[in-house]
Length: 433
Image 1 (cartoon, one colour):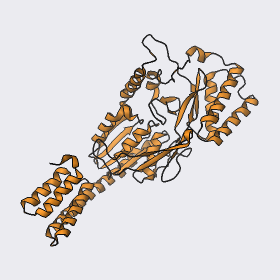
Image 2 (cartoon, one colour; image 1 turned 60 degrees about the vertical axis):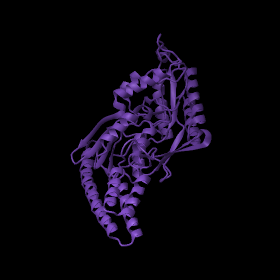
Image 3 (cartoon, rainbow, N blue to C red; image 1 turned 120 degrees about the horizontal axis):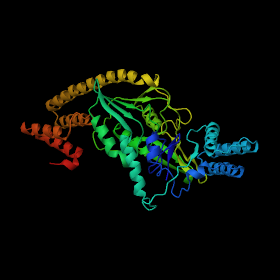
Image 4 (cartoon, rainbow, N blue to C red; image 1 turned 120 degrees about the vertical axis):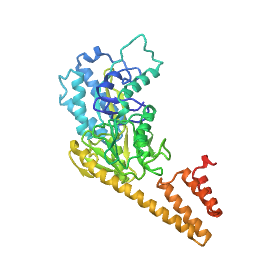
């Protein structure tokens, strides 16, 4: 089971994950689910004093796991070599507290490896209870979903602001398997907006599946957003937007993304993807800089380490935001980024609405041109091109297009009517009347 991690909080879902700011709620509610299967750690074991031999064994195991799993072998070797050198120098001598050792190892690894996903922490113990059964993973899934439900799966606020600007304050990217209905409802509420603001200033990451699901509402055609290379199997997985979503797409609506120093991991991917695709305007501060997906591995019965096992590869830049963060288009303190973005979004919303009105004028002119054309083939071509363009811009739906066909038929423009009816059948094959 793969995980991605921010600080000391884990997001437990299926598939590769990014860090998630679940906070104290999930830290307590999901304690049973945050331990790997077979975890034998107990509070008593964690409180035991580390002997010199156990401390040496922990550091050796950390080095071995890095060398075996870390996506960058050369960096893994560098980190392991540094830890072993520090051990020989006596840098860890007398460090008997496990939590203190974990914190120190994390500090060293993040500094040497320049990777904020590298982290050593205490394993969360699972208390044995009469109701707990090892063959009931559904209990753990329910516990995770229930904790997510109480946080509305990260959707803190979804609002319509003045100027018909849609706003969503998203605190983490939940797994689509848990949050699909909530995400769909949120995007449905925003569907009539003339501009959108995604507030990711307090978003610490989560599941890449939700990144791609939400992004799919913003692109007309399947778009290659990101790829992940994994050391194991020497393989690369590509991530594309979905061709269809459960609701209207907002492919031309202006999009703004608020970022800050707490914006991390999956939230950075969302921001980076929209920036590189020129689909969104970023406002705020440079993000934290964590791009590498990874796994959680046990060190011993009381400690575990999160190791990035892959790296993000953007199809446009060929690289990612690891260690440098995502820079906004317009810099502002995170605390005032919303005010700046709102001003820009309201202007963009007016421009978007004006563009829609202009398209209607253009459509009406082209319809008149088609009906006035003496060449029948030219008339059909102009009419069908105009209707396709209007459909692409969502000015007309299936009912509207069929009404055009009916109107033309009533005025004995049979050739044009037949062409429009055929177009409607092509665009809506499952709604043929």
